[in-house]
Length: 300
Image (cartoon, rainbow, N blue to C red; front, side):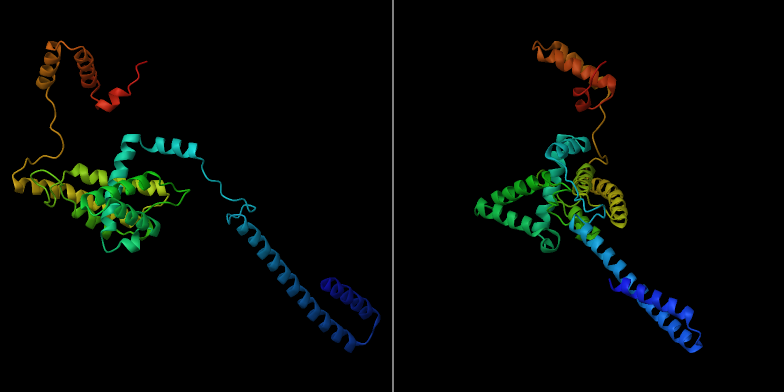
């Protein structure tokens, strides 16, 4: 309304100026008109800014995505189940959950638990520990079971990752890997006595946790971790040679002679289950595949 009044007043002055011949009046009115026009421009810009602010407020109140205030839609339970199945199978998912639970238990017993673990997860671990009683083994088992259950529930829509991955650096995770030792056997408690596959599973579990939580692993952290894993392979081999163990990592290949002997032994057995076992072994050998791949094989 004020802007319309200014415009009408300016128009009246401009009309009056055309009829007046006095130069002084022309100069005075013209300068006044310029000042009024400037005020009108400032007022218009202020109104435009306020309208922009109102639009931003409307968008932010609807979800903050700048798309007309529409809130972000979350995945349903059925969609989550399908998405998780497409990433890894149930066996691998359970394996990764175990690895991440061990890492979470390590963090819980470390000095950095308050900085990296979520408060609600710390409370849950404390509760599981109290319920288990005074037995140390039962406490550890209860806390690991609780940690595993929470690792299986992680999803980016729920923001329920027990570990704050954005606060965790390479130093924390590399220390965890370097301190892992066998829990049984002749090398129990010895550093670098685990096989390389154990470290690989641990790293794969961490990568899986990043994917589930929707968190992007920093490039520097990823590069350092790759270099560290490569060094672990050499370190494990050297330590095995020093201890007198076989300088070999992984499983020993099965020769054709061993395969032939197994088939012959199965032929000699009278139990019907060895008929299927021999057929399964022959199929696995000829496909050069893992047993799990043969189980899910489809012949067209």
